Structures are given as C-alpha cells and as structure tokens.
Length: 271
Image (cartoon, rainbow, N blue to C red; front, top):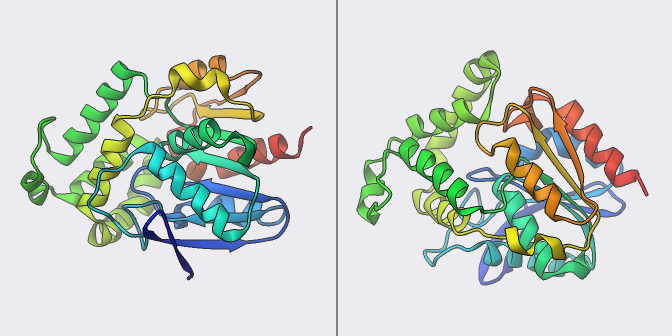
C-alpha cells in the first residue's frame, strides 16, 4: 500500500474508485480500514481517499506534539501530493475535528463538508470526555510519560468499544476480537498524541466562517460525542443540514452503515 512524505512524516493512504475526490478522515485511534463499509459504497460514485492519521496504523508516529491544525495540514499535504485541488471532506469523531480545521483554514479546498459524530471543542464538554478517555487508559489527568507503560491496552480498547457501540452482540461477537488484535499493534505515544490534539480542539467561535455546504450527522444514542454537540455545530455553520439518526451510536458508521451511507450520498449528490 502506498506511502508519501507529508509535513515531514510518512503517511499510508489508498485511493479507490473514480470521480470527484472524497477524503475520509477517521477518528481517534482508528486506521483507514475502519472506513470499510463506506469505501465499498462510496467508491462506486467517487474517488475515495482513505489514510492513517499521524499516530496510528502504518503512518509515522512522531514524538512532537500533535495538533488539529497539524493533522489538517497532513490532509491538505496528501491532497497536494495526489494533485487534488478540491475535495469533499468527511470526518468522523476526531476526524470531524480535523475536517473542521481543514474547512476553516483551507476553504478553497473543500467542496462539501460532512461532520459525523463529532465535537467543536467546547471547553467543559471536552474536559468531561477527555477525562472519561483517560479513565479508560487508567491514567490521571496529570499523567506522566512513564505512566503510559502501565496501561492495559486491551482493557482500554474494550472500554472504548463499550462506549462507542450500542449493539451488545455486535460488541461481543465482532469487536472484542478486533480489540485484542488492535491492541497488539497500537502505539501508545500515537494515541496520547491524538488525545492531546483532541483535548486542545476549539473551533466553536470560528464555525460561522465555514463556507462549504455542510452536513452534520449524529446518532441520538451517541455516548461518546453527545448529540447536543452536533446541535451546536449545525447552529453555528451557515445553512448547515443537521441529521439525527434515531438510536445511532457513536460508531453507527459501522453499526448502521446503510443509513449513514445513504445520508452522505444524498447530501453529496444534492445541489
């Protein structure tokens, strides 16, 4: 699978399909393969670009601090390498925060914007969510670098999956084995870097400047990024469309891919 050097790091990526480019930006700890259900559907109509964010998968995991702006720059750098002037941008969870920064800092590069199950970095809300994630790690808020070595990553992944997915059978039968497999591959510093970037995200007061037509989509049963966050985001972005999927979990892109994919495709194909 190809790699390219962007912003001083090697990024692993893949291109599927033909047509207008559609960039998919995955969330915290997830690699490009987590878009499996979307890539399969979207590549029939679009040139779909998926990649591992810095800190995960086969992309480099630099020791320097991660920021949302740096990860947005990674996305733009990959577009530059691939010769893509403008693209539809779809970001999920942490990827939605990155997508916001792309739209805010590079408005001319975004055709349409889709923000799925994400946040805008409201301080109190982010602190609450970050605290829960740190608990899953078994870390204090004032954790030290050496504390990372004591983390039970398999337990952590199970905790995250329990919050992200609502279907019990789906979690136990399908995702727990994946958690064990992923735990053997995960890089602690990469996860901590992404967590720190997410904790520092704050776009709320800038959302009104987003120019791209925007879809904000969330599940009403999201326990990781509360649906009220999507209400706020949609209210701040001019003419944004808000879709709430009844009963959808944080990970409803996997649990309810048919519904999610239909909403996205309908939005992209609309005028």
